[in-house]
View 1: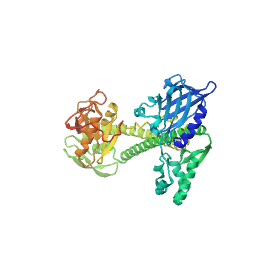
View 2 (view 1 turned 180 degrees about the horizontal axis):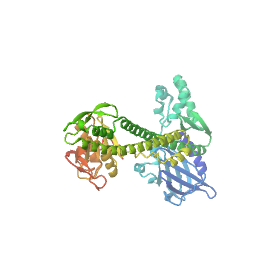
View 3 (view 1 turned 60 degrees about the vertical axis):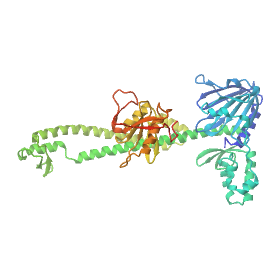
View 4 (view 1 turned 90 degrees about the horizontal axis):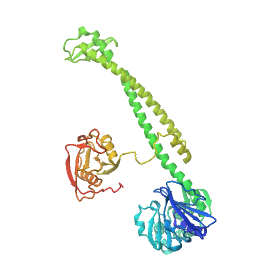
Length: 519
């Protein structure tokens, strides 16, 4: 609830009490998705740090802040030196603004992964912290108040729709009502309980609590309460570092565990395959023994035989041995002796590989066990720093995006180097390969489904994607060639993404991405 209207109203009141008489000294950013505002009144300093990542948005109020000498960018310079007049939260909305002298306003829009800070001058939007949200330049901070109002008549008509009647409540107040047994009460008693809850939200305490093992900021006593505060600034300062540490831990731990477990599974699979090869070798008849049997029975082998039954003195029995009718038994034995020599070399290499792979399995198993014993973000940071074999989560493991249509998987290369990896290492020879004709673009692959031909609607969809992620993206129509992957080859020394295509067919499509997920 750290972005809830009821909290932001309390926060704005506290900030106004604190910042009255302060001037904005500087605004800068030295970390991606973080904005720092420094205020002073001649005797004191006050800092606001706006954290606005794609997964977490909040404010923090550090007691001190040391600005870095490098990689620090000044922002909103036109409002520097201006004095704070008021801090006001929007009614029933997740935003507030700071009004400065000379008509300057900073709007804090706290809309989850679309959060932003917008500068207004004379009521006109002038600059954004996150420029990617260009539509924020259309906002008017004076018109962002909402008029959600809950009446007894509305509630009693449909009490189960409380969340829609007051959408700014969020999930924790609704959970609080459930914990208070609202579902078992009569409608009038439910209404009374809601009124009591809203009264608490008007003058709340601030709780750090765990729900489903996730740390949450609440204005109501729900879940497993860890800490309670009466000051909104102090509460946020306690919540933000703990939540970000938890967020780091859950994201990186999960990715590291999954990656390490996968590495272990692959290593174990390879080790078992090697063991099976060694087992087969030990239980098979060595080439040298077969050659010895042939040489010991030269006088018993009819000329031109393709197969002969000979006495095997190693096993004290007879067995059939295949020969080449076009070569002498001596030549066959000589060839088998050469094979035996190579087989011994292969065995030595295989045994060395088995030993190396066994060590890898033991190491990965040890690392996985150590990882599973970690319970905090600092421990995890040290672990990941120490165990560099475990890749950090980057979302870049595969060189392609994956889509599905009509039961067929479509793979789309992410860039030129990724195109090479996709085409050369992630395809079957009978997969269908597509590319916009005569222009740079993504390699696109439709994965083969055994026993099923590629339906034309699937080919058309994949062709549209290939056209869309090419230099012909803005053409009305684009020719796209397609062919089985086996007719695509990469010449030696060719630039990334460059290939030679044979036996292609061409389809004409409108460039578009029906999946709408690749940026």
